[in-house]
Length: 223
Image (cartoon, rainbow, N blue to C red; front, side, top):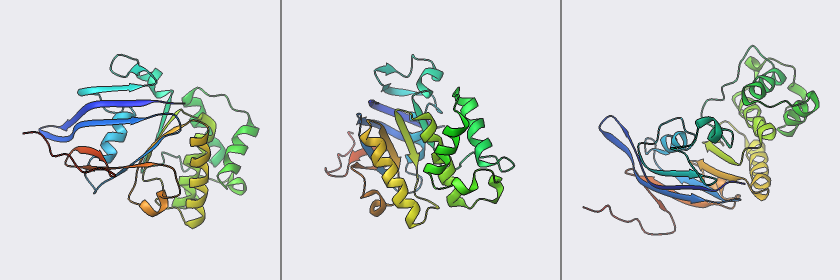
């Protein structure tokens, strides 16, 4: 179970301000979906929430911990970011990739647990095949199998529906509904409102560095 809170979070690349006063709250079982054009800052915000970028302005708390004053290792144990790249190793098979991930995460799963995670994402017939032969959709499924092992309290997803066919989308939504039902928290960036519609979620628009719920009118920045 996770509770995330940001207050007036800013981020710049040099002189270019990408995020400008981001306020976001999501509690246990909550799903916030970020919509916006390419380059609007969705991936940057997810990377910041994953502590890949240092917080330079504003405040970010996760499960009551101030991210600025808490060790990165402590924070990262509570979350997982799945982005555009799956970070899988093509010369390793599916089981070996999950074992390597588990080693990095400090997990000690049994072989049965590894195979169960692979079966849960529909790849049980490919457990011992090198990942280099996997399609993009199969790689996405295997990357999501990591969630079955780590069960983080906060799941950050960047365009999770990309490369998934209709069956993959249905499977992903079922997995996320179960995850949310167990008290997990999801922050997702997406271009697919129709696919997200199956999830209980709050939609947000990110534009011009500012974030606001899509059910409300946009507030103009103060002069």
